[in-house]
Length: 240
Image 1 (cartoon, helix red, strand yellow):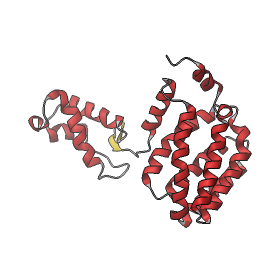
Image 2 (image 1 turned 180 degrees about the horizontal axis):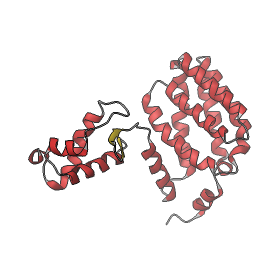
Image 3 (image 1 turned 180 degrees about the vertical axis):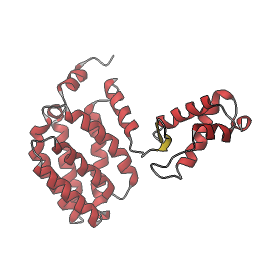
Image 4 (image 1 turned 90 degrees about the vertical axis):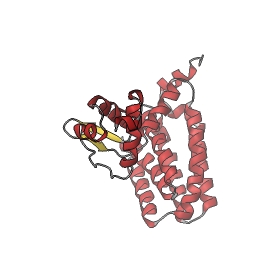
């Protein structure tokens, strides 16, 4: 098998590509063959198998635990969220630009959700808003806030929206959690979320677009309040 896979330098990458195709047919939590089994199956050393496992972990496809080997991971976009964080730290992107991305995506998400939402989605949006209103002033408010937006992505009926929005929300969670200004916007968020949910429940795409854009543009206007002091200081530093 080693001769078929190519030169030793490229063995781990090619083996990772081969296993990736198999992993995509499995379910989250399924166990892959053990290190010795993979080494024997492909005719490679355990060192190659370990490097292959490292590549699969980097791709977010598997987790590796002592005694359990590789198991199929849930692809949740955490690696993408990490990249968002690096872009901001390297001053190659700003918090405001991330909010622009969110604006472009979520306004149209709301439009599709108004046309495609299910009763389960509507119930989820209502429950998220109930929790939102009930948790003002507590640490649970942020979870309810971002949960609403993730359910909205699911209600759009397009899995790509959920894949992109989830890491955006993961990054926003880190920013808002450390921001003293985030709680001050709570009452606006509750009202605007309710307006979005009402428009989607009514099946009115135009109204959903207006409500979602109104909410997100308010967030953009108040970006300096929403971000933490450390991020504002970073954005004031020269990019060069």
